[in-house]
Image (tube, one colour):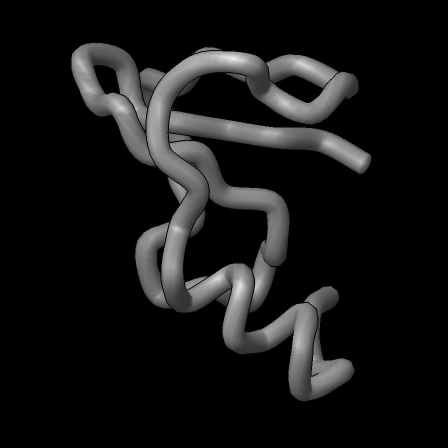
Length: 52
């Protein structure tokens, strides 16, 4: 699973259907981030089973 955050942002996203999913100028990593914030929308989508 890819985790992305906009460069200069502290919030990580992992659902590509998140309204804030970065598509340019972002940092990406494949392990759960140990620093920064996790996106509330991504967490909600994951809990609801709608994360893509």
